[in-house]
Image 1 (cartoon, chains in turn brown, orange):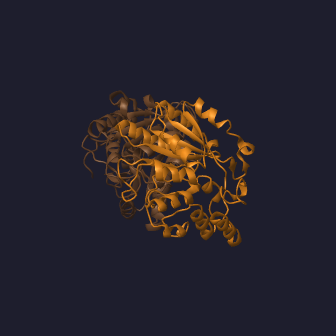
Image 2 (cartoon, each protein chain N blue to C red):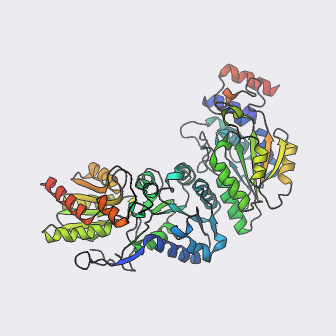
Image 3 (cartoon, rainbow over the protein chains, first blue to last red):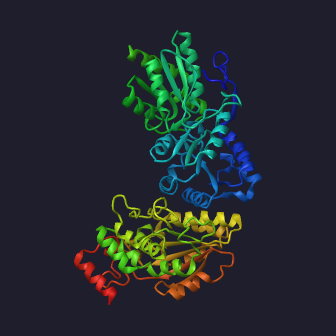
Length: 326
Length: 256
């Protein structure tokens, strides 16, 4: 059991906190005060990504690239080559999607300490619809050598992820969300890049989740506990480098895993976990995520139901995984 | 320089002679007369920076760096070999003096803009130079970067256009015309100068003229394959190595 997180207060008793993007905006200002080499770039979405907070305090260190993500990424690389510590932000559909070759060559191939912080990941973008809902960004990011991939679960962890990214020597892709999310962690929580964290111990099945789905996994664990199923809950906030030791240990101890992510089931957390366990410790793995399709318009809560990104869906998957185990 | 380039590409059996040969005078002028650099100290913080945006001209850059003293010219013949520091396209993590990894066209100017922004932010005296191809100018990112450079008034940035008028599939104006190039760069807010890209004195003078608060584009009129009779002005020599007989003829022409 890890310290630093708040246990759910009864049935879905999680308290709402700030969005991960809001925490990012605040953390940038914090970083800007401490580190003069921090510069921030945005592509005309600074109000949405929250980089505007930094821009207001440090206007001389903020560069708006306009609606030109490819050049933004190249400029970030150039700034890093000249000794700056750039954070570049846009929506997760555009970063890395719109500028993938730039991320690949200018950032990852050159192995530069540029921090790519994408907000509005997943379907909780809501009413803007599929064109603005990134469900494949984690797959794209994971495929690139040298790139570290982080998906924090709440505002406290998003701040931690921002600070950890700044200290990390190489490129980082940090995926954040639009909506307010349940507050899971106490202020003292530490995000250590490359380490998964077990929030709840359990004997029968492990629920490995990232981002907004971590709170759903905790709710699913409560639902399963009521049925006498002991589910462990693991926060996999680093998708790459993946904590293979912790995942193999979870497979060994519980014999089945369910992954949960606000992303396509192709290429994200589910794929990463399945790849590792298939090679090192094969046990039943069921992936909860968006099945190979695009999102759509609607209120975020309704979309989460529509696409099966719920505690109920995780609990159902856990029962299926348990059945396969036996 | 040209002999180096042809021997390297001939030895490697592949590479891009045409666009390497068109850029020779630009690179030599920069590295031997314009750039403030210390080859023995490639990471010297106050150095001028050069980015080869048209990364396929890597043989020309490598030959220039070697002759300038960044590494032993004997290493040039390892071009494109497994384990070589001289990759097919520039890799800054491997080759001393290479400022940026390039090869995917359209990206170098953005890198140069970012570097120039950093220099401007720090009030630094060093300058940033880059070299683009005319075919490369078909990439939209080039114009995103052009806008940004003018917007941020990067007078510490100078770009060259290697205006050799040919790309892989044929004449640039037939494939997809970027013309009129000078007018386009002017319209994007740049100071535009025109030079004979094979005239070092003109290139050096253009680099030394005051920028006046704007980024500078030097449109260098060049001949693709310059110096080798059967390559000059021929698109098929964009990305093809000469065979042994062709190489011998080229070297004989260059030594004549």
